[in-house]
Amino acid sequence: MKGIIIFFSGTGNTEYMVKLICGEFQKRNIQCDLFNIENNETLKDEYDFYVFASPIHVEIFPNIFVDWLSKKLPEADNKRCIVLSTQASAVGYGGRQISKLLEKKGYNIVYVRSIPMPNNYYLGKFKATTEDKKIEMKNEAQNEAQAAVESFLRDDVYIEKESLYITELCKLVYKLYKPVLNNFAKKNLTVDYDVCIKCKKCEKGCPVNNIKFDEKIHFDKNCIACQRCVQKCPVNAFKYQGEHFNQLKL
Ligand SMILES: Cc1cc2nc3c(=O)[nH]c(=O)nc-3n(C[C@H](O)[C@H](O)[C@H](O)COP(=O)(O)O)c2cc1C
Image (cartoon, rainbow, N blue to C red):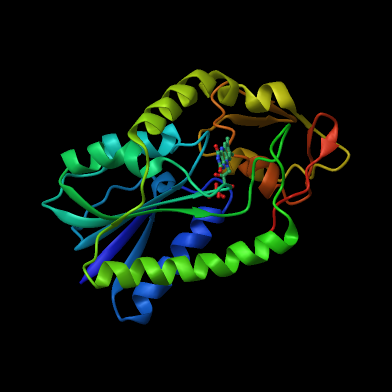
């Protein structure tokens, strides 16, 4: 039996989670590959099972992930799959959001779970996760990974309850909020050039090519606000409302 985990991760939380899941399968001598949707590869092999994972942005999965699934995920013949999200609060509405899409493509969803992870979007009214809570979340992520894999291997079905009404509402909110996300960097970020080392990691790492580094950093208007540039800058050169970020370290 071999499986694959197809994921998007803006700043590393989801990647951390999927590596735990992968480890749980491998501990049981089950082959499990990781597939990052940003690598621009096509899925060639057929797998016996699939795991889909992404962070939650504005309560649902971001377009970058859903678009990949809708355009690039091949059809399958009733393959069992797990759907996971990571988000700062207890619940995200990703499972319900993509269930129709996956079912239409021939995937049989048997496990849906939203897993709390540290908040990478602590701006305005959204608060950063405390250090104690981060440790708790990391430990809990390990338990979640084990529970997901065990449930899957027992052939159980576990679908987290997600209201259809709330999911539809979240989709609408995401749509309305999208222009704010697209302009996030352009409107809100400045760069401290006394600190910047011109390594261009932000430009190379941006999942939507929204950053151009030409002596100075220029942002375009197709940002998805994933926070990778600000969280992963090796010298923490970005500023929001004049203040440097308190970068999230897992
Ligand atoms: C633009 C944006 C919007 C977010 N919206 C929510 C949200 O609505 N609810 C929530 O619980 N977490 C939200 N988060 C927090 C992330 O879902 C969470 O930190 C996630 O684990 C990040 O995963 P990643 O590191 O793989 O990108 C948001 C993060 C971003 C960047």
